[in-house]
Length: 96
Image 1 (cartoon, rainbow, N blue to C red):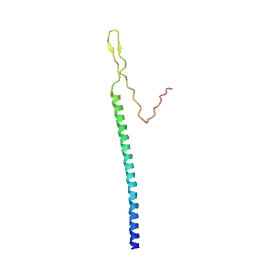
Image 2 (image 1 turned 135 degrees about the vertical axis):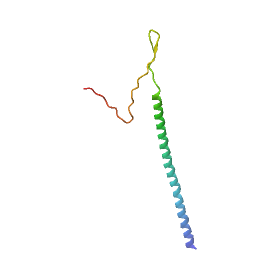
Image 3 (image 1 turned 90 degrees about the vertical axis):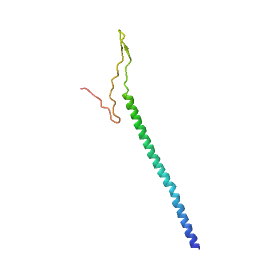
């Protein structure tokens, strides 16, 4: 009988220890999933910001209106200067 009780105690102890490891495994999986979700959200926000930047760049910009002596109003469109690509260093132009 003692041997049977000892065996049952060992089985319960092993089951308890195995069950104690499950929450840490689940917690690690949840943390990994949360990290992937944060990365996906960050990527989506970066794409959204780039889309907004492109939309703003596509809106034409104008200089201040000029009124000529004959009453004509001239509104000139500003010339766009190309923006440098992100991560690409600008090259200085030098003349010799």
